[in-house]
Length: 190
Image 1 (cartoon, rainbow, N blue to C red):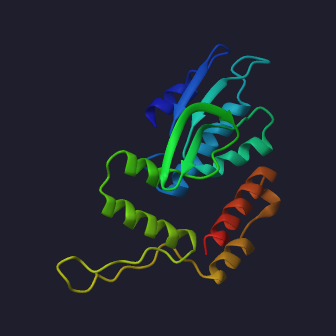
Image 2 (image 1 turned 180 degrees about the vertical axis):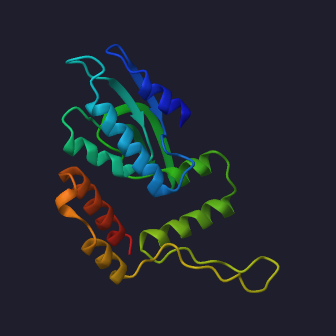
């Protein structure tokens, strides 16, 4: 974050900004919010009259691809991938458009993460994508898992309450669109 702050404080008409994974190491929503706000700032800032900052912004937050729909100078690019059965081959070619999906688990397997961990990650991902949340397994030594609050499932009443609490009159159209996109993505994961 200090590097990001330094970059944003020292922009000029000749600046080329290269950012990689802004917001990593935070909670998912914090990370998305930070990355989104930095991208918006870089899009809008004019270090000198009539000048704009050129930026390369790498992120794993797929939600940020929506910025290309709302901001005239934003373009999405991704690395071309070929899938065959359970294998993924990164073709080392940058192509227009966002990635069609995440390849984090495939990358973990390619990096040598044990098969047992990769298989469990796939199972957890399926549960998260269907809104079930992860199932805590008993410890290997037996016994019951410790009770844990479910952080991944929110009731419909919570979402309705959140919608009702939005102050649409004070939100920008982009903020409203962003919020609606987040709620839709949450609903799809159920």
